[in-house]
Image (tube, rainbow, N blue to C red; front, side, top):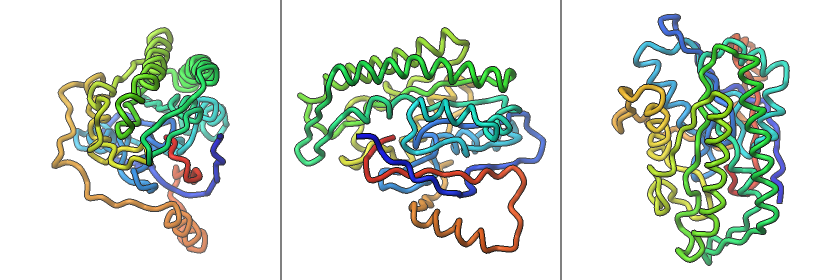
Length: 286
């Protein structure tokens, strides 16, 4: 049931701001950190909204989500952090958010969007969650070693299947609650801050998660996640609805074509732009 990752070279998600701010913000993790939409495109996600708000308040010096990849498990994030190129990007970070863990669990789940049914094996879920426990601890420790000045925030997850039958929700909610507990426990034990988002979404967030066959939120859902972050970072900061940018989704095909055009261009790439991207197959993972 593992998703094949198609690695593409694409410049994206990096902003350099005039030096009026002090925060160097690096986002790590899966497709939520990358800003994947419910329709298999990439647009403004919670990390972008955090960066946007910090820019408006004069606090941001640099932002990149070049280390955020759709479909990544905690093992993938850990391996990515340990690469030399990632360490170069992370070493000056003062702020790091981590979205990792959901794919470890969700890749063990079978969902029938038509019938609204869910199936998974308990022993497989137990094994996946144990891997999350070990890997998230090591991810936090690796980031701390690379960027000792960074404040680290580990993002929790919402209930990803609001469209399934009510009778099907409780079993998987129990497993997702175990995931949240692991992320929170390891965050606190290792000096990071845990950000809960599940209360803001609830189990019936069909408006924020409109596609029954996909687990990704709308931009409004990402706004909810960004504000959950700010409740821990600085509760005086709030992303309002009128601050949301106009939708500008890029399909994976458009991203690939844009990269091909960029390779043909004689214009040199901006320093600091990291050109890595990853796509998943049609499997609706995070």
